Length: 310
Image (cartoon, rainbow, N blue to C red):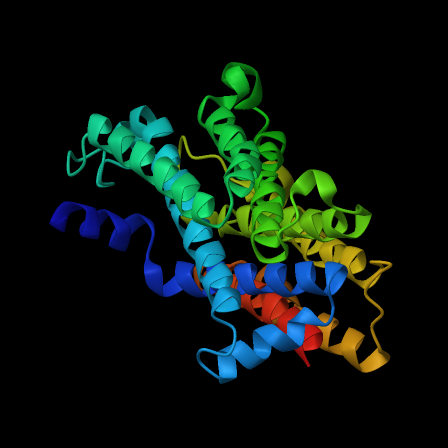
């Protein structure tokens, strides 16, 4: 446990990952409820204010969050296994590369987490666990690099968007968990919002691999190398805007002008640092840009929670 605690602290720091995954979970919870059963949002809010008022509601939200947390931790472990050979050369201090965690141990952890996710959902419904199998199966395809890794790896952006698509399926699992509807019973609108998740996760992926010139390393690919800094920043910002366009045009969710302002206003969190980084591409500005993208994702999801729950 001590070694795994070190692994999590280094490669899956809870201080940053828990707020992001929690905001992601809550946004999908409230969007799922608003699209399928609008009146139930009040029940969920009441259950948060009055313990015991609606235990099932709190249980479903807690299970959705726990499954999402376990799922993304499993993806992190998958990446560490996949990157092992590369890390031996360019990141030798990472946990697997330096021998803190052995690959067989990492694979055992993946197995335990997979069983845990499915078992937790099965408590609510075997059908829910079956529905989540789509996301699980896709994550294992990601681990295998869709069996065309040699073709995909040279194409950084294509490789990324194929992997971030898993956010669509995890979002569907969360919506299924709180509504009781399986993904094959969804109308068009929940899938619209699930696609918005894809854009937000693309933003996170593109930004975290965008660097200042002095941060670039030999043998480590980045979007700033491929597209230049202005191009990489523009690519990232596009993925901040597209999800908002999708959410703003969901047919079942009618937003007032004030609500639309609340949804779009968090863009200032990422717009300012992005411009500063393009104008002055220094390490400090690059780190600010990456950090504020994380803050934007949390603020963007929470603004949606506020709009739907108000």
